[in-house]
Image 1: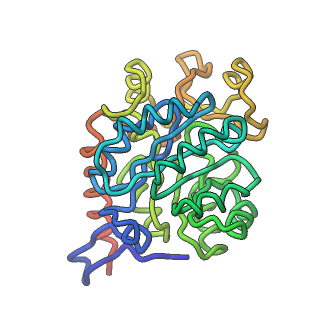
Image 2: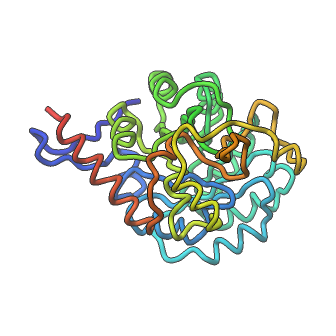
Length: 302
């Protein structure tokens, strides 16, 4: 389901906009990924106020109390979203209840193959999203009523199935389903943003580039490591999940930074981390991505 990002004629007036972003009232089709431990209420507020869709993320240890605390931090915004991990939601159903009661524009539940939650999301007046790692998962999600599919490539930071690169996966999913498709995984620069939008994505789901922002919950030491890292400084591992006895499937390791000796560290990072060279306000980061992508698309436009 391809959507043009080229507005205007002759390449003179190119703006980042898609039917999906317009439907949600967003200025730009950018979503901050709902990263547990990084994407809280302050980051969601900053991204939404800057024109994107801010998401609050609940991770492996999340509780309803944690989500409520981040919702309190959420400022006045037009739209926001909440992202949950499927098995965590099953273990703590009150977490799902709290998310729905907040009436976000988008509720994302990922990393599971049961879609019985979709009906409750719709009943609450919210749109349902999920992350997929292959075309079969995308088909199952759409058949179950999911409104927005996030094609998450193996380059993505944190948990997921490291199976297919972002661009090949995005192309296959776009050719297969007829709902909005967001691209995720390794998108941390204007060039990467422009590439996925030019390929037909309805939006970009960005994690690592927002994890370093001042409004993120990321610890100062982890933020410094992310800014200093290169794109080759990541690895997938189950070490920390096993140590903490989290119920992540063996097929879903997490991509993290490595230390100088090449050992995994507990800092989630995607392979786009090499493009992240500073830690500024989220609005500034978003605007730099947008302006750079628009300039590239302007050059490419006929």
